[in-house]
Image 1 (cartoon, protein in one colour):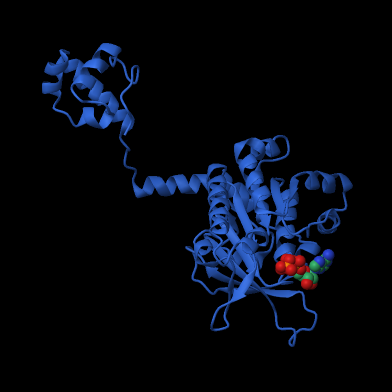
Image 2 (cartoon, helix red, strand yellow; image 1 turned 30 degrees about the vertical axis):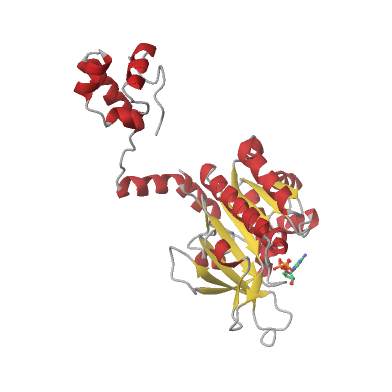
Length: 332
Ligand SMILES: Nc1ncnc2c1ncn2[C@@H]1O[C@H](COP(=O)(O)OP(=O)(O)OP(=O)(O)O)[C@@H](O)[C@H]1O
């Protein structure tokens, strides 16, 4: 509880403060829980004046209850749903990526995590005309690949360049650099990136596990602590700046041989939504670019919803995309 200080509210001057301290009233809590009549006598101040001070302090320091309806209204007005540009993935994600939340894509090597992240970045920058922060920790992102995807959207070079400018890329390869980057984004760089080129709607980290997993295991408590710091910073950034955070994670096998996202139980509470990407059986379709996306954690939809999509989706012309409309509707 706050310590009483001069000027905290009208009438709380130095003389009164001294009197209150002499009566062992040092904090706002002490004052509001005291018998005002008796305290007024002890401090030689009028009951009316002390009562007024108590009322102001109560108003300043009491949390006001809000109804569930107000809370839901606030959520609706502040949350935007950002289409990934791919209808099947959007279906699994209940329309797309939600701002203020962390969404995770997990999968084995070659499952398509990076390609999906590139596709989402290109969709947001070109179709939605908004900015994206892309943190590449694997060195997998190339300007050529982004351009390839953009060329399927438009043949206009100026539009391609404008879209590329809205994708802000950070390349880093260790967890300390990742934390530095997230802190600097939180303390101003995110707003800077928004100036003049559409506001930042998503922060993509591909891959979060590449810089954290090597530090976990054994008795390395430091790794766990760094992971929690990354999680906390990402979460508050997503909430405070109302951006969607999309992260990728590797997979491991459980004792029973089941494929599960990496980084363990502590991390499993961090993403609000988790999607597992898997290659569709090679024996069925050889050299296939088909992938399945299975919802494995969600507070909105039943888990284990599964959709099959083609990784090449973002490399094809996509007439009639509804992503832009969705963002505008939910943002207004
Ligand atoms: N330039 C490209 N053009 C078309 N398809 C590509 C291209 N690069 C990769 N792919 C396809 O995307 C697949 C998945 O690659 P991607 O890098 O997205 O996997 P990943 O899940 O991120 O793997 P890792 O965990 O090893 O980084 C590849 O197997 C390939 O089929």
